[in-house]
Image 1 (cartoon, rainbow over the protein chains, first blue to last red):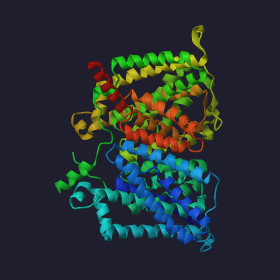
Image 2: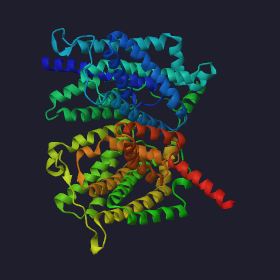
Image 3: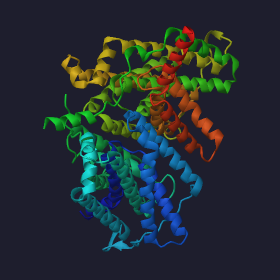
Image 4: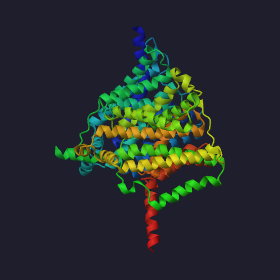
Length: 292
Length: 340
């Protein structure tokens, strides 16, 4: 029994990583209706910016805030320059664009900061949390930040004018434009916010997986899985999905014999496919009404 | 309420824009010219270039297979590398462990992949768009790990993989191994291309395209949606399997890590660059994924990824519908010249 509880705790700790990433993915999906395959690389680049600033002697929290601002601006600029012209193009062209962005960011980061693994500091410390060996204070802090972020997003979308405008622009672009919402800029804003959330995710994840240009590869796949599992239209679902994937992955690794690290990922993905087949919109997504 | 639903429906754009049926294949003159170039070209180049051209044709077949699935029936797949791997392993195992002739392994690889794809098509029926993309992507990610499993190690060779012997030209033909393999591949590509063009022109092809354009209307016309969707998956996987088998013979080596999801993404890019739903574009798309990474590497070693990305962006901006758009421009230009 204790093993089970410990494994679930450890699962929640890794799940927090996926939840963060999934939140950023859902954010951009809300704004533009596409899965951004370059999301992980954008987060990785932001994390490198934070690391560079700390190398220059800027204190942690200042570097954190500056990174968020730079990431936000970067997200808006990428949308304005690269993806606005593609707004009317077919979905597949957009996906190819994301893959191109992925290749560019990964390669540029590798050139500037090279591929050696770097340590990244944590503000929460890494002592055991409440006497448990499986979950450190950093991981507890990560869970706290993820939940806080979720609440902040909920409040933003529910109670602010601009949040309402963004939801309107995503749900019904034409009607939103008729009531005077600048839908183009709402999309850019969505990119900026997703990029900033990705930066938070990257900064939180980096102390665990260490900083290098390919650090997001695995995380991004789990993040997608979490987002799809929870339902792409629901931020709450994305966070829940992240924790569920983390817990499931750990339990499978512990209790099913013969499943090493190698097979964890395929089994987690198999679970997600199964969930999707039973409930195609994810656990918390709503069905999109289609007119014949 | 009805206005709300109207808007919802309008934002729901089609995933694939419908190409007119007559533009699915090349014109007669262009087809012959292309064939002659492909026949003559290897006589003038080095062995390594012949090998690259063989790979070009093989990837061309794989991109074509994806094109039938996406361009034909409107279903996404980011998991083609899994079928490619199954085809490659089937050929490799049959040749090395059972001593089957290399040419005979290809139909077997195709048949096995057809069955796997057909079965995979059933759960895929319930998924669409981005969810289907994720499910197939999961297949692509899982495949290398499955191939490494200890249970199959006796046949697959585990992480080390299998070494496949390269076939000699039969009947004592005075051709080098590379040259023979090139013409062998060319013959198979041609057969698959013609079969695919005819498939899409047939009753089944029209049924698939009807499903792509409007599923509900298609089912109202009496088309068996689940049958044709799974069939499209099966055919696509089968053709990919043949490409995989050919790939194993050409590269002379199969190993789990040759078939990661990066291959699936490359095939996907090939389809987008070649033009979704335009079968001759598959060759142009294959050329993009075979040669452009090399060109990018040539421009700068450290920034090859960035150059690849920039080139991809340029292609997307200039010709968002891929090589098909280029071909249409060329045709217009040609007609103008002929008239004047």
